[in-house]
Length: 621
Image 1: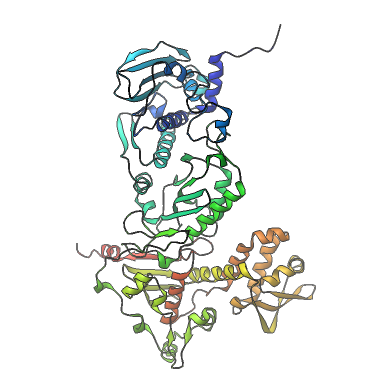
Image 2: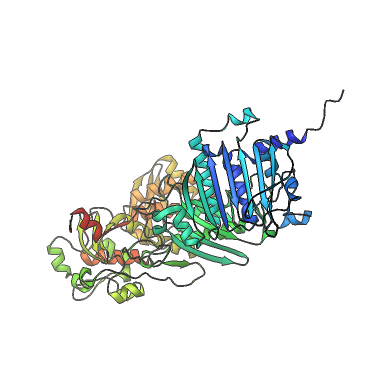
């Protein structure tokens, strides 16, 4: 007796359903994609019990003829591909021809459709894979598909479904993603008889606001870049203070298809690594378009993964594009609320990686709130020193030509002309002018919107880091020989690391020599960090070099090494600065890429608007 036998169509469909229709949200995704492929302009979704009891999708798409209905629920029957060559350039969302058959095998399935030129509609019912007869029906246009009692005939599968609340959450997430991918389409979502979302067709900017809310919209930066047939557009959110986008605000679309691709996710993690703090997650909504021949979407039953023909080029393109979008200096970020990141609509800052200039926002505050001109803050050095706020030699050396003391003994900041055009014409830079220092830690500044609070060390750390990265990218960091070498005690591991990575240390601006079995002589330091604590700096760098391991790994982690060095070289807390020195720091923040976060992803400044301060003191109430 043979032990191998063919499976029945019903059993095949039930097995396929376990892959294609993992849960109600997976069925919803397939139905929505079919509606979009049918060129629907309006889609309505009705759920009951999180989609487990009922899942219905209605659209006004092209619809189907009578003879198409039985084929629609047949396995591997589709209108979207016809020849093997079609698989090389798939331009539709659905193409496998197994989704409806799988759903019909594990639910009480109903399909009603009317072609656009047909006189009336047709209906087909399928219960647990048993296909009924096609009958006349009433429907204005398009297609309506209903799934009742999902997995009613496969209890083993049904018991793996989660609670109604969990399944509903997955369905809503799927709905939001697809609505975001196709903003020109009108979407309506109902659950348990209650309307949840009604989103008319809109621009991409408005749909992002609808889906992710105002918090995301106010913080998002617009990104647009292209290279050959590659084009990346969308929004990235810098992880700055006051920004708390939704947890699911991380969507990436490839030719209109939401994907979770390892190449894409790694590229975006690399782009955010320089600005993301701790375990925080990046927030973005990005659309990648490319030639359909350059990507294979037929690698996963649920079509959530893709395979790029040249994955390294795609990775590099996405990472560099997102990095540049996140690197927009503070001086290019202005909105009607003051110095915030760009908004999606109206007064927003565009950042085009292709090189177009930023569109600066308009400022609505009355001139009575503007601070006085910068020259009013200049203090003679002798006067400032007498008050205990003399200029810091360390900070002055670091800023070089950007901060100087003239012959008359007056410190001066960079001219206003170096700020953005619009803010310069108004006489007030984006971060305003310094008015005080708080406990030697924070700088208080006044701008159009109100009060700016700056973490002095965090801001300076980012400035030093970006300068070091810029220098190291083109050449080795310049060294400053110490007049008297500094000797430091070192462990055996540190001694070995200094010897192994001597060449790397030289490119970073260090010269270390062994003076004994447990003593290192520090003869040169990076010129930018010549006034830093030499021993602490060298200990930190040697620890990083050991952690990174071989030479190749050190090269890959060069930015992390520079971040460590910048942290030790930045102006420390409790260092007293003069008003001009504070203003010099503010101006450099405005010019520095990623100036909104320190090297560890912490915010460097925070805006307190006059409205918020008025509310705090109950003014006008």
